[in-house]
Image 1: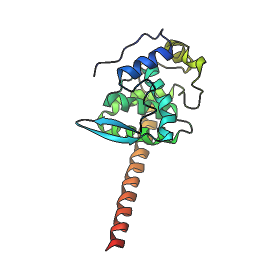
Image 2: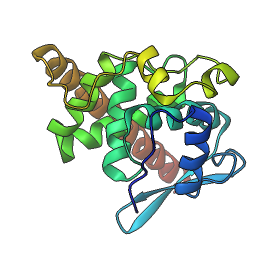
Image 3: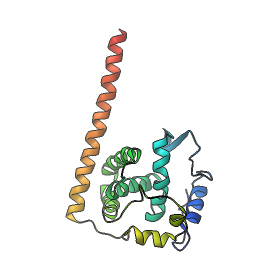
Image 4: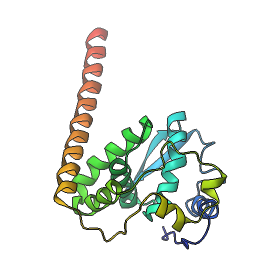
Length: 194
């Protein structure tokens, strides 16, 4: 996919619409879809478009615009690291999906994703802020300034590295616990059937 580029002097509203069109998300950013498909190499993982996802994606897309991270595999892992670093507020879906991204990032290219994490730790996410005309009519540059977005060239500190690995380890433990619970449930169901 061709890289999405835009001027930070454009309004958030205009850039968001161009971003949706560039990524074939539709005029509403995919909010009306029943399912979304996350490409993972040659296959796509289906994700139900639950209300929790719809609430989170409104902010998630704006975070892509603020950070400049793309919507390819690496870009999604970068934004996951950034969002966990910046915080996802009370958005359970964002925490759940981003923790999985954090775990994958730790296995794929931790150095790259620690940088995104460090940027997130120094920024404020938009989770919980109203997505209203005030926000949509400001420029991307102004929005970046309001959330204290550092440059991409940020060098992570020791504290960034330690906190990243603690969160990444936690995400791995949670993922393993979910897998164990799933297999335990399947085993219990199978033993009851026999």
